[in-house]
Every structure is written in structure tokens, then in C-alpha cells.
Amino acid sequence: MADHDQTLDDGAIASSRSRTHPPNGSSPASAPRRVLGSSRFARWSLEAAVVPEEEGWLLTYLDVITLLLVMMVVMLAFAGSGSRGAPASTTTGVAPSTQASNPVPAIGIPGSVSPLSLPVALAEPEPAIQTDLLSGLALDGLDKNIEVIVNKGTVSFRISSEVLFNSAEANLSGPGLGVMGRLVPALNSVATYRIVVEGHTDNVPIQTERFPSNWELSTGRAASVVRYLQSQGVEAARMRATGYADTRPIAPNDTAQGRATNRHVEVILEASR
Image (cartoon, rainbow, N blue to C red; front, side, top):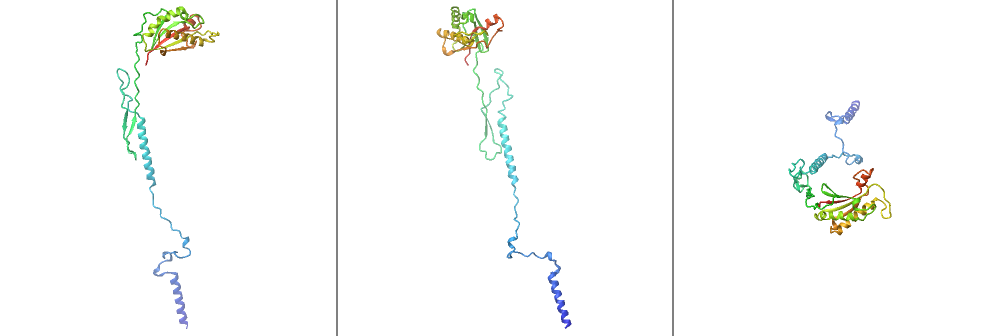
């Protein structure tokens, strides 16, 4: 009986060891994990999703390269046609004109369908202005009181107001009509020139019922000269009357002689462009 009990105890111990230590000497750590597929804990088991590696940096890199190419084309467009430094003409001193446009191919720009054209504005040459304005003018019969002044592009006939007008008056006097009459042939000899009549005074103020200031006096004298020239056959469309009062003196106003010089009428011929 004792032997039988001893046998039962040995079997129980062996059975306990077999549950505690798996066969073949493997440890519990190396035992396969039990799958919770159908157990009540399966919903709490989260499998980590495998995210494939995306090459998003490549798209950004391509965008940067495209922007650089576009910037290069824009810089070429602003660089101009390359006419800077072109040799100037020996006769006119102006650089020779370039082509109207310089085609530049679109290099490496995705979606480009046509070459980029760079328009080059061509400066229209200004019409030549006659340099010798005195040629063709009938100056032989001018009065000795008319001073001829040649400037760039203009010829001026300066006449003292004392010769043309009485003091504080804007109507041409008898001697003034004679002087202006001798100027008419010179003005009509160049019918393509414009005529500007300017009235000038000194800085001594005037205040009358007709002329409240030197502005009215200078403008009235210029208009009187224009009316007379028109009556002598000078085309009205060629003429313009302007009064400057004492704003454009040609001599100091601190002396009597200077003030007398500043009181004048100037008839200016301007070459047509």
C-alpha cells in the first residue's frame, strides 16, 4: 500500500513538472504566442499598419528646379537685346538699331509649347531739324531796331517796347506799325515755321482800369502784334501770343537802362518738326 502511494506521488510530481517545463527543454519564453483571434480580448489587439516610404522630397526638388529655370528665362528677358556697347554710327552717333525681336527657346520648362520672344522697342528717329535757320529768311529789309538772335532750333526778333508802343499802352504806335511791317516779309518767307510772340515788362507795377498788372499789359502787347501780323497775311494757325510780365528779365531791373531792356516784345520762329 505504501508503494502504491509512493507511485502516485511520483506521477503527480512528474505531471506537475511537465506542465511547468515544456518538453525538449524549451523555456516558456520561446513558446508560441497564443492567437486571440476568437477570444473576447481580440478587439483590444491593434496590429501596427505598415506605411510604405513615400519619396515626397522628390516632388519638392523638381518644383525648385522648375522655378530656377523660369527665373533664368526671366533674367534673360530683362537682359535686353545685347545692343549695349554696340558701335555708334560715325555720322549720327547713334547705335545701329537691332532686330525687332530675339527669340529665346524655353529651356527645360515643363509644358512649354513655344519659344519666348523678347520684344525690343525701336526708337523712331526724330525728324531732322534744319540747322541753318537763317537760310531762306528775307532779312535784308529788317528795321535797325530789330535785334536778330539765333538759338538752337529758333530765330528770335527782339524789339523794344518803346519802339512799338506808347507808355502803358498795348496798341501798336505809328512807328511800331512801320517796324512790324518790315518784319512781315521775313516771317512769310518761311511759311512752315511756327511763330510765338512773347510780351515782356520790367518789374515796375502797373495798375490801371485796363491793365491791373504787368500780366495783362504784356499779354495785351503780344496779342496786338499777333493781330497786326494776321492782318498782313501771316497765317493765324502758325501764331501764338504769350505774356510773361517781369518773370523773364534779360537785364537787372535795378537800373533804368536794365528796365528799358526788359520792356520788349520777342517774335520767335520755331522750325517745324
